[in-house]
Length: 432
Ligand SMILES: Nc1ncnc2c1ncn2[C@@H]1O[C@H](COP(=O)(O)OP(=O)(O)O)[C@@H](O)[C@H]1O
Ligand SMILES: [Mg+2]
Image (tube, rainbow, N blue to C red; front, side, top):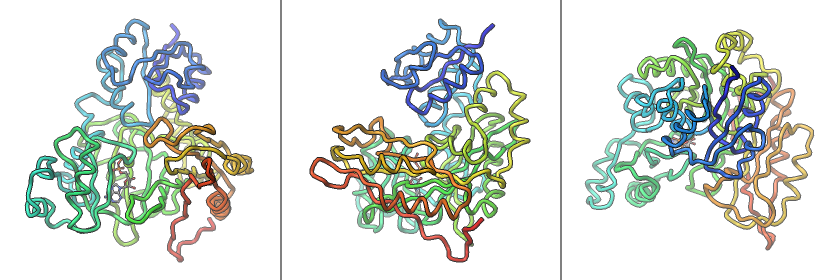
C-alpha cells in the first residue's frame, strides 16, 4: 500500500519536505493553522487546523489513514507532533513523557545539573516574588550568580522575552518584562555567557549520537544593552575540532538520561578558548532555516533523513557512513537580516544582493507596502544562503552583504539593522 505521510507545517520551510516525499512516491497531507502556507500547493491534501489542536489532528490522521508523521524546525511543531503521534498511534522518536527535557528550559537545566554537565549558573524565580517581593528577597533569590545575567521565559522560543540584566538594580524590571511573555509561574535567570555560540545538529541512531553539523551562530548587538540578534550561521564552525568531542559527549550523556534512542537532536552551546563548553539549550528537532546548509556544505539532506526514518530506516546508516563533518564540499552560511518595525517601501538593494553569484537561495520575506511585525509569520526581513570554495571567500562575500544591505521605509529611513562579523581571535587562521 502507498504510504501516506502527514507533514506538520505548511510554511515555506516545508516545501522541500513535501516535494521530496512526493518524489519518493508517498501521498502527502499537510496541516497547520496558516491557511496560506505555501507548502499546501505541493501537497496532495491540505488541512487548516492549528497545530496545537492535537485531538482534531489526531482524528484527521485516523480518518485519512496516515501511517507516518513528520515535522522539524520548531519547538512548538515538535511538541505537537509528539502528542499527535501518541494520540493517533503513529510511530515517533519521542513520547509525551520525554517532552519536558526538550521543551522546558528548567527541566533541561535540572537534568544538566544532576548529570554534572556544564551550563550557565541559573535560578528559577517566581513571578509572584518579582511582583510582590521586597528588593532584598529578589536579590537573595539570585545570590551568587555573576553579572551580567539574562532573564528568559521557561516555555518560549525564538529569543522571545529574553533580556540582559547588567546591574543588580534592574533585576526586577527586566525579569518582569520576561514574565509578560510567559504563562508559567516562574522564569529563568541565568549567567550571561559572552563566548562564541554554536548550533549543533545530530541524529540519534541505536542510542548513539551522530553529528550532522556544528556551525558558528554569530550575532550582532544592534543597540547597546539589547540581546544580540542572530546575524549569520557559518558551516562548518571554525572551531569544529575544538568543540566536537566534548559537545558530542554532553549530548550522549543527556540522552542516556532522557532515554532517547532515535531521532533528531540539536544543541545550542557556548564555548570560549580556555573556558570550555556551556549548554544553552537542547532540542529534539533540527534548526529552522538552517538544515539547508548541511545539504549545501556536505550534500547531506535532512529531508531525506526525516523521510527515510519513517519508511526506509536502513538507508540512514549509509547516509552517516558517507558523511564526514571535517570534509565539507563547500563553505556555507545563512545571513539573517532583521529590522525595525517600520513599513517596507524600497527593497532594491536587497533584491540586487539576491543576484550575487554566491547566493544559493535568497529569501526576502516582506512585500513592499507591508509593515514589519515582531514575532509575526516572517522571522526575518531577508535571509540569504551563500556558498563559497573556502572560508576566506565566505568572509569577503559576507562583508559585501553586510555593508550593502538596505531596505527603506516610505520616508527613506533604514529598516534593516546593520550586521557585523564578530572579532575572531587573530591567531585563529581563516584560510582553511
Ligand atoms: N546564558 C546565556 N548567555 C548568553 N546568551 C544567551 C544565554 N541564554 C540565551 N542566550 C542568547 O539568547 C538566545 C536564545 O536563547 P535560548 O535559550 O536558545 O532560547 P530560545 O528558545 O528562544 O532559542 C541564544 O541563542 C543566545 O544567543
Ligand atoms: Mg535557542
